[in-house]
Structures are given as structure tokens and as C-alpha cells.
Length: 301
Image (cartoon, rainbow, N blue to C red):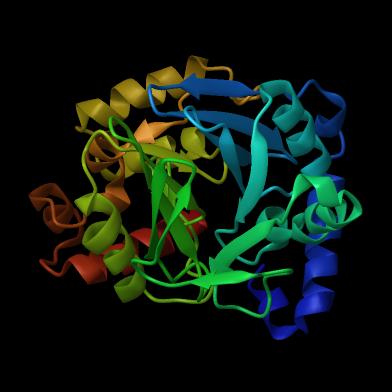
């Protein structure tokens, strides 16, 4: 992926699309079972896509207004929208990589072909690499999905314009983290630095309420927990989650996601760079240095 950054964007997107299509070919013939979390104010449906991606349909339970996060497989999204009898008019893009933003054009075209559906508003960071962007957003920009409140968190590092979306009802909270925060892990530093990832994970995401549900962009739980266990072998929370991941239906991708911010603070070594055990492990008291060392170790794991 890092080599693609030197190519013109359209060429890199086509090559990336080819890679993900080929790598997920066998999985596309398996049932892509959705998993729905129904809360008081909102409903979140996890929709598997490609090899290990997640798309998310967010529905305001009061108004039935809906938004979709990273709809790389738009036809599947539209099937779920019809099943749930909701009104989709918003597309939330976390970042420009094809496996997240690659469906923007096709979904926008479907709306243009069906004017009775209304306008599709496409949100994302200010980045010409995000197709059909209509509503560029930055840190602390807000908007609504029906009665749900959305606050944008700028988390550059994996890409320069990465955005996480923090969604609140009166009683629940959820954050859609794309490739910044995974269950027990974080994204590669393709376009950024340890300083930026530290700000994203520690300065922003870890400051959200502990009960905030975390919906990430990929199913990487097992390998992330295995790595975390090598870093903190005495961390009981990591050990318990690793056992769960080893027996979970990860192929069907029904298990473990969502996590919570509180859980991530206990099991995610990238969110624990300030912990005394981490300082002892890496023989430094500088959490940003630990962040860089952790990422370098994970890249080789």
C-alpha cells in the first residue's frame, strides 16, 4: 500500500481495487450476514464486505433517517436499507482508500438515477482523493442523522485526511473509526507520524466516554490480540480477549466488534503507551517514542 502513494491517485485506486477484489473473491460467494445492534436512540448494522472490511448503516430510531459509513459495496448497502425500511441520504467516508471510499461513485450514481430518493450528502475530510465529496469536514464539525448528533474527529496518520465520526443519541454513544483505531490495534502510519497517531488515540479517542461503542473498519482482532499478548504477556484483559477471539466466528465476522473505548484502554497496547508496564518494556518514558516502536514491531509481526 505504501508504494501506491507514489503513483497517481486514479492508478493507485484501480490497482488497490483489483487487489481487494481478487483477495476477497472466494469470500464474496459466502453469505454476508449482517449483525445489528439495536439501542434506544440508534440502530447500527454491521455489513461485512470484501475480505475483512466492515460497512455500517446508522439509523435514527425516531426519524428512520440513515447514514452509511464507507459503503464499498453499495448494492449490498441498498439491500439492507430496503430491509430496514429507513431513509438513506448521508454517506460518511473515513478516508480515501479504495476499500473504504471505492463505492462512493456508484452509490452517488444510483441516487442520481433515482431522484425520488433525494440528495446523497457525502462527508469526508478535505481531500481530492475522496470521490463525490459534497460536504468536507474538519475537527469538531457537527451535523445530524435525524435526531442523532455527529461530531467529526480529525485523526490524520493512516491517511492525511482521515476522519472518525462520533455519534450520540440521548442515551448511547458510538464512534466509527475507519482505519485509525481497530479492536486491540491501530492502522499503519502510511501518511503520518507517531505524534499524529498519539494525538488521535490518546488525545482524542481515549477522551471519549468509556461506554462509547467502537466500530472499526476491519476485522483484525485475532492478530492484534496475539501481538498485544507478546507485548504485555501479563495483561489479563488481553489474555481473556485473545481466548475469545480464538474461538469466535471471525470468518463470519459476527464476533467482538463493536468494542468500547473503555475496553480498548485495557487491551489495546497502542492506547496504553503511557502505562508503566509499557515504559518498562521499551525502556523509555516517552509515550510517543513507544508509539513508534510499537508500530514498527507490529509491522514486522
